[in-house]
Image 1 (cartoon, rainbow, N blue to C red):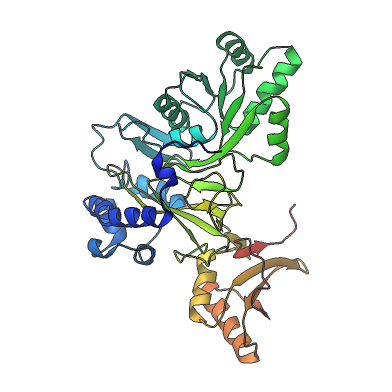
Image 2: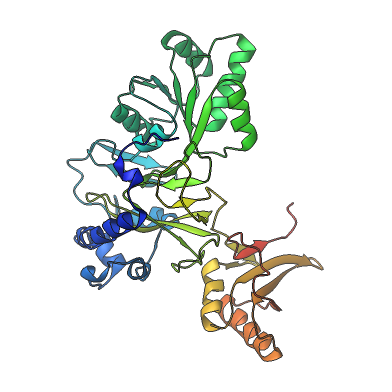
Amino acid sequence: MTEHFDALEKQDAAAREVALLYRLPELIRKAMHLPGWKKHLGAIDTNAITSRAALANLPVLRKSDLPALQKADPPFAGLIGDTSNDGRLFASPGPIFEAESREPDVWRCARAMFAAGFRKGDIVLNTFSYHLTPGGFVMDSGARALGCPVIPAGPGNTEQQLEVIQQLRPVAYAGTPDFLKIILDKAQETGKDVSSLKKALVSGGAFTPSLRELFASKGITAYQCYATADVGVIAYETPAREGMIVNEDVILEIVRPGTGDPVQEGEVGEIVVTSFNMHHPMIRLALGDLTAFLPGTSPCGRTGLRIKGWMGRADQTAKVKGMFVRPEQIAEIGRRHAALKKLRLIITRENEQDVMTLRAEATDCNDALVAALGNSIKSITKLSGKVELVAPGSLPNDGKVIADERPVG
């Protein structure tokens, strides 16, 4: 637990923060040369964006909006410049189109692989797809940056992969946790030897404690990372097994779903990422995933911020009586009533009809506030709703702004 990829992982946490914020104005200046970012960010003083508070004043760019933006302004909605010097162009589900600049390990994956125990010379079986999406290349570039030979296996073709494992004897696995289980199950069924696999970096699926224990029973120590096609590896697990470390060259914020407003420390919210790729800047990209910061420093000695890991999706849009109700509408209700703390809209069924109930944390509970909130619900959502005022701290800390509790089916 004392080995580290480089000195950056052990630097003073405050020094890291200062260095990141110092680089922010340059990143935003680069972005403002691109028409898409200039339109999105509006008239701003780039030199003034030198703190997290200043960054939080910039609008978020929702990943869920990228398909429509790119369709209206192909190919990249003006958010990426000249791609003539790029290595590859991708099309991820959505579809969302991405470009890969040519820097070594541009997705910042080597650090996560090192934390998972990958070392120079380890042969890596990479089962992420190399077809159209960046996943295979994210892991491939990280492994090769470490000096690891890579088997570009991709997903599927399980029996052929078993033959490859027997012949080439890879030490490490990169891919989804589900597919690793498929390989192990098929090996047991067919009597094939996959005992060379000793370590794994998994992503793209739920990595439950039971799966981790299953892999361990087969002699494989597995760790997970949190990555996206737009940014690369954002956070990664270490031998401490206490949350995930936020990667270097990334500013990660956690905001209230439907807004760009940072949550209180420890509160669950939506992940927003700013990535220091000067060729393809990404500023306040809202990923739609929920997490929370962990306090303190990891026992592994890495000093980066820690998150709890993936805790669900932030996109809680629901259709009620034929109308869409969105988290940003609940946030607007909160802005109109500044005395309120946390809000949560509960959607249920009564007498075969949809019913909305807004639960709001308030220190001063009175009929006037209930009436005013009812009016705001109607004004903003165009639907009527009940109001329940509750004590501060009584609503769950799970990042949910809209809880759809209607029966399924």
